[in-house]
Image (cartoon, rainbow, N blue to C red; front, side, top):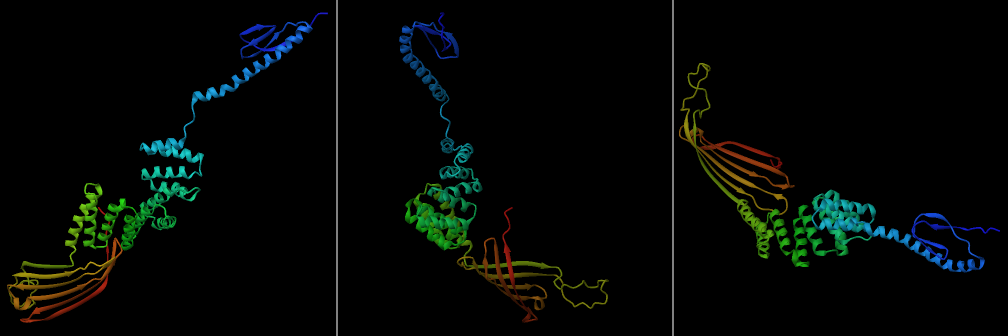
Length: 403
């Protein structure tokens, strides 16, 4: 009886012939015929074939498993957008950094670290409105970042959102987050709100907690005193800021402000005297029609010389004291004496004027209550009372935009 030849499945490719079996390199599958040995030899061959087949299978599996690893090793690990963004941020490439941080934020929307770096990149671009959102997330989400809180306060200060900034200042003070920097930012906000006394206290606290804030705090205290019109104290503070580091930029600014304060102190001195003497020539001091004017035939004109030289003398005294806060006060007295060469006994006058205007300044707008009294004496031929006038009413002054 003709023996049947079994059919086996092998890998097609280069091969070795060993004891009636084929060992092939990995590749596509193909069919091959194997020679049928005798029953005794077949049992022996099967015993040898089993471990050999297992070895082949292990080799194939190892090769297949190694393929993804080899491919991954060639392409490299994908870049981390957060690390790439930080690298661009440190290189001052803020636009590129923003794009990387946006990618990182999409991948991890709840990450406070990513939110903090995105907010800082916006801040470096002076895009303060966009920086508020990420920095707020970095403070309110878990875990909150201490660095983000003070940066958020700084951004809100720049946007003049002082009420929101004050709330976060209170949180920072309660949690004792960067006490010196927090006190300094608090002083900046209070100064913007025209609370100069409280601002000075905050700056004093800042420099007492951290000596590195001394020069900046002295400069800001000088500005507060200058805006509060306490020029002597302001000059002392600017001088102290210069002494801290004369060669620094802040020292140069302090020196300029010191000169400005001294000039302002002279200009705004409380007592001012003004004396003027003006020559005058009047062609019609009588304020009457010309004689023999055909247009006025029926008018009986008084005699007198119509033109005359005159002298107008004025003495003025102003009192403008420097008051704390936004309070204003000014008072003035003016005496005017008008002397004529001709018709002196009937036209010379002497006028006294007293003005008072207390008020309050709201920044660009000031509201005053102005009062004025004028008393005039006229020579006839001796000086007699000629008239009196009174006026009282509100006065509003508005500083317009810079042209």
